[in-house]
Image (cartoon, rainbow, N blue to C red):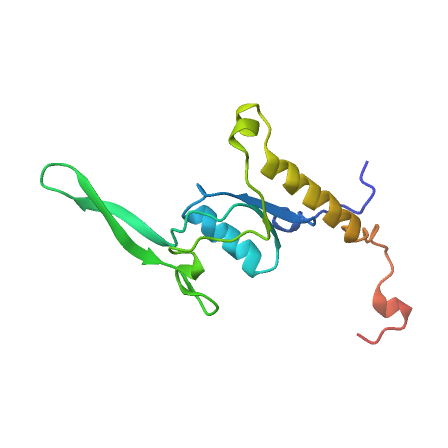
Length: 151
C-alpha cells in the first residue's frame, strides 16, 4: 500500500551515506582520477597505498606498419589545485589512511586494507550519523491559498 503519497527518491540522489575508496600501488588511470575526485571534493576517505601515478592517459590508436601499436601519453585532466594530471602523474594519489597488505596475509585470504576500510567506515558512522530526510507525507487537499496565503 502507498503510504508516502507516491514520493520516492530519484535514483541519482538516493545514496546518502559515507564513502571509503580503496586504492593500492596497482590502482591506475581512471581509478586514480576517481579517488582524486572523491578526495578533492571531500566526498569520502581514501584507504590503502599510494596509487601507481598515471594521470596523463595513453592512447593506443597509433598503428605501426607491421600491425603493432604504440602508446604515448596523449591527454590528461586539469584542475586549479594540481594542474595537468591532477597531481597524479608520476606521484599517485596518497591515501588518507595508509595500509599495506602483508603478502602472507593476502595469500591466506586476509585483506588488511579492506578490514581497515570497514573499520574507518564504522568509526565515521559512529562520529557522524547518516541522517535521512523525513518523508513529507501524503499530500492534502488543502491548498496554501485556502490557509490565508496570498500566493
